[in-house]
Length: 257
Image (cartoon, rainbow, N blue to C red):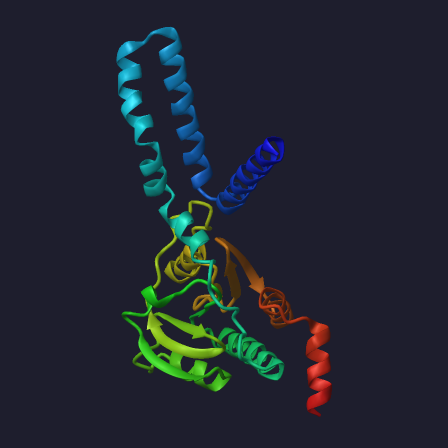
């Protein structure tokens, strides 16, 4: 019995470490974690060799190791914990509405691209984005191409900022998002792209970005950005990430005729 418990204990620890590494993979947190590991190794060596002063200094650092981890990885921890206990994006929405929702987003992004109107459309999934709505304007309306174009038109008083979509409906407009500090982002991309990438780093939200300068469509998710998408590619990405297969879409369309 003790052997089984020990094996279960090791498997749980292995899984937690594995999921943590997946969470921070490709982020600056990896470099920070590597630095912390080097400090721990230096602490052990200083104690073994007998470097009293260095060991005394590092001892205070290691004793506060847990608190240091929380501070350094606060954004990654927040992103991981925010995925627990939330409802699926499409809960309470019919499959026909799912298809309509994705098609309207793609049509809107394509129209914005052709007109070279900058856009940030954030789709909430499991993580609660209420913290980013304080500066926004509450709307609560069906997601349509026409409404998105109206909100983001330069003459609109709420065209600055991001559109926030919750449960398939446009919930807020004019929201301000955290800017990414990633050094991997191309310098030719401006504030709009950094904001889109920033919210995807801190939450599990999906972000559609349309460049005002080039009209190109980009997509951000999990701290990664994919650029130069056409309508078909964007549609497939949304279908995959929101759990709507193309086969299911065809079935719904055929039944609706």
